[in-house]
Length: 341
Image (cartoon, rainbow, N blue to C red; front, side, top):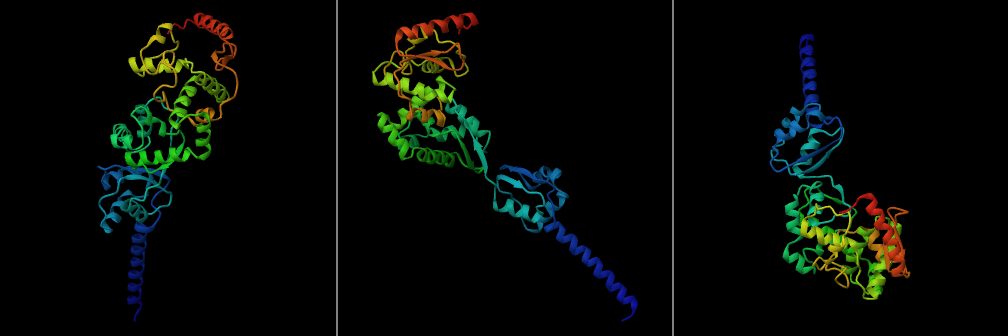
């Protein structure tokens, strides 16, 4: 074999090696340049994905080339975390299998089911209308002894891990399972010792939640309301009056001051006119409010009003005379501030 033939063979070998290397790099080489969260919707095509990853890929065109070589044309809906250094082969396999990365969603106490659904819809694929429809489905409510008002109580404010594509029904089931897990033997025992059902505990907790934002004060407030329940006195809880007003005028109606005329509202949530707890919770209580009821402070307080000497807290009283003095001081402060409604 002469030198010319050897030279040609060497050239062919080198070219073949380069082609093989480029072929390998297109498929298995590092394609993604930095971590990125890719959302794929039902209407997205491979071209849409190629455009989406243009700023995060060395050569987006090779993604389409690899997809064609693997006979892949329809990505599965989902939320995918693309890792730095991921290859086109990895990306195609991920989108073909629907191998999503779960995300953590969180929510705090929401006033209404509508607001809660909106908060969740901001974090997962499902929209708020489909979520509300799922939460208020008649069979689901009937099976679990909830109403459209009381079902809000199954959503315990916390952080949960879900897939972005979780269906409203699966999300509802996940929340119900978490709710049942929350009511462990210890909490159920404490509720029974108070003579309250789970529904009643959470209803009272929702009032405590609205009454004070101070976690340290919540067991005291809970104890006060339990004292009034035991005596069969009206709770006279302003948050329930505000709730009743909003039921009439809309959730966006602002109430900074409860007026005497408001106490005459004809509503089952008017705890000035009705003895006992209202028919359902008035907002979504957080864990601290629920546990405040279950671990309520044992004391002799029956009255409370805003403490103007320590705003954000309450002045508690054992007698009506003492309360009237505290209330008069508070009303003078409100008038001075110009708070009429």
